[in-house]
Image (cartoon, rainbow, N blue to C red; front, side):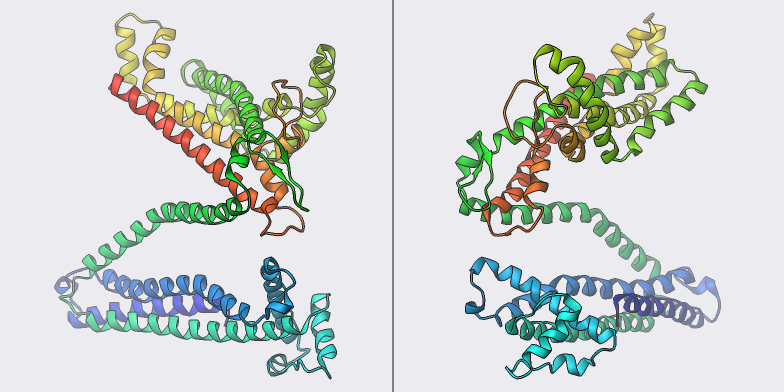
Length: 486
């Protein structure tokens, strides 16, 4: 049974429980709604919640735990001598999963029965035929130990799926039955539903926190593996970045940090003044007709894919800066440069600063403006001394969002700034950023146990800490400013 059918059964049980429990509540009250403690719909909603919520929670936990348990069980089946390098065990498990999927494909296509897939022999007489049959679905040869592990993997997965479906349906039935049994005209169904909704809202609010914790823990785990193979002093303090997958890599972080900050600062120098000034004009000076046209046109910039910005940087902005500035000034001959990526990225960030700042400025109470005008201040003085200070928290948030967007950008940097890891003050030289190197280190046929690949997780964690520091710094500024002006 697929998950779609399982969800359909759970939904059908919830609907059936809703109507049956609602009808039982009305029957217990003799058909008189006034005798019920709660409205009839609350009794039905209580049954639907008790049938769905526990079942879905168990289903979610099962979907997370079953692959881990099956992988751990099957991994122990693979002998060490079948794996030349201990670090390749994960690659062997990938082959096991592919063979298992191939067996499923053969069964679904009717080329073999489920029993035949389970009974494929691994004896020397017919192992070649068995591997050839499976290899048709995979397009590659299959080793005997991988075939045996794949059969076990498929068997355990099938049994786990069957047990999951049965247990989840039984839990849903038990929840609906419990709600039906508890339903009387005196039962406080509204209170129970409201408690359930409170827990649901609490769970929704906790998703962001739990997701952040999960991301940090996963990054910490892989980063710990990286630092167990590569010295942290070389990573944080070396100025040389030269990864070599054969060994002897120099994985210094400083050139990537320098390129990230350099490009981001140029982008913010372009985006913040233009975006803020356009927001001030649209909110304080522009007529309604101009605002209705200009604001949507500025926001169109936010909808352009970053790959389009990257092509614009590669084809137009880069050659223009090279021919008009870099070559005449003797600063470089390449169209890929920090300035190219920074300018194009700044254009991309303008709507982030402009739209958010415009909304924040419009949210400033009109009474503040009227009071300033009543004291004799001009419009420009009111904007500078009243409106902007009052809107500072929102403006700082807009700038922070733009900075985070700039630090995490990849495509514009790849096409506009190149992939050269270096530390240079010349803005017309090619450089790269942390995000670009994360992609390059995880792209291709890589060994996820080598420091050259695990360094991507160390870079990601460092990038996370960097953006977290920006958030903390922004909160500090906003709180200090609020203490001064409130």
